[in-house]
Image (cartoon, rainbow, N blue to C red; front, side):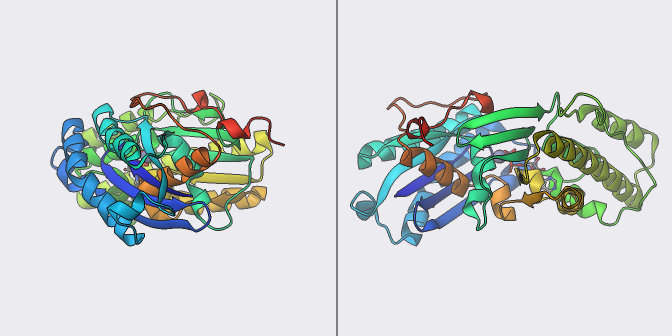
Length: 350
Ligand code: KG4
Ligand code: ZN
């Protein structure tokens, strides 16, 4: 069963084809970062317009890479379903992907399914060899979300903790802006932090020993703002701040992961979302989880950030277990992960 996946929730146009037997067949991504860079962040209207421009050419490219044409895609052995990100995200941007996906499914006479963006992120390790079995804990760290989730099965998610204010990626992006670094801030801070000196600054680790498994990053941002105001921002100082900021975020994330693994007793931790590409986080988590005997897994870096492959994969799992959505197009700017349910055929399994 081949599923075409379409991701347009933010500033990346992602398209992919996933096959239940063969795995990931083709995927393509167009990033809008250069478009948004001069504004220092994503401009929703510009994002929607660019998805409109890029989506169909990417679909054609992905079909070609899968040896499919417009005609053969609709036939035997062609595309059996279309999955699209239906939320959460920028509404206009989501509607571009949803409209194109729904229309293609109608034209091809096949089902379509709307996928939750964070479910797609947390399942993305399934695209790799040696994916963990359920149950596992997922740390989702992206530009819009930071949460720890207990994953019991497809569609069975309990949010163990989440950020009460800024997401981890958002904190990276805002701090980068303060330091005069380009958007997106995460990779820029990580690079600058490499030349930062240890110990010159120490920023707070908010809610480390309170708030259970919840996070808060806005106090950290304020601490950085205050520091930046009182200092002469020469190149070395900026690098020192970047290093101390990254250390504070990484420390907090690792600390909460340790707590989550202890409280669930699970042996597998999956990390996904853009901040999961951070090298420092990976090194520190490896150390922390090793000590607990917990296996940590990530999707390959290109599948940590937004992409069409994770949407094709999550959609394929749901379609192959009997889920199909109505003809009406659905897109939701806000959508909690724990509102999801398992697909129909998994009820009564086992
Ligand atoms: O998952 P993602 O691509 O999009 C959302 O769904 O938000 O995550 C994007 C976020 C941005 O905030 C970006 O700054 C951050 O992930 N990011 C990183 C790194 N690469 C991307 N943060 C820290 N270190 C990185 N290497
Ligand atoms: Zn994302």
